[in-house]
Image (tube, rainbow, N blue to C red; front, side, top):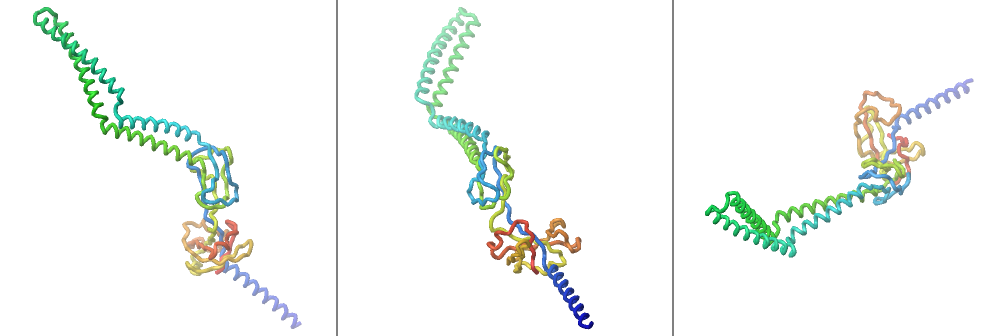
Length: 321
């Protein structure tokens, strides 16, 4: 009977010790999540998707082409910009070169014809003056002769000024204006060409593609996140700890992280401690601390990034104290 009583006492003591050990183990393990740095790629121009060259789960390198878009509006702008550039360059060249020999001959011929008209009008006006003094010409006819004389003189002065300007060459202001218009047209062409090159969505860094938001044939708008994925070797672990327990952790301290689904232990280092702004940001589903406590985020980086390569994103992990 005495031996039986001792056996029961031993079993109860063992169960109590086991329960305390399990409670202690649960108490020293802090639950968190595995994370990776996320990156997204978006088109700079709006267009319809012609081709998608990658698949979800695929690893891509920086510079790889992810998709090709159809952007007919940009093609039309390029054609317009090329025409405007050619016209502006021709105007600038014309301003620098000045008048051609044929233009000079035309102006000289025009001047010669107007000179003859002016000579005739001058003679007719001289005769009209003499006749008007002798009362042989009415005032109206005299005024008509004077008007023709003044008109012929004005036309001759105008062509002489035009010929003089051509002989001196184009003014530098006009040359600068024409060159400015040519530069503006060239800039518009360059802008359209750059926009056309953006029909290809290019990866800017290595990543593992997680999500492709659209399918071939759908319309991708500028700035819409078409591809998203994780940057390799950026796995870290995020834990939330209440103010009452934060003293047990310090920046730079080495810790052990246990991956819950594989039971693999990964050595890491605490790289930051940050207070969270709101209670909803905690990672523990059922916190066992006062909601009024301040909550801090602990960020742990693996000592060797290769150890955490295969850890699934958002997998539950445990932090040993």
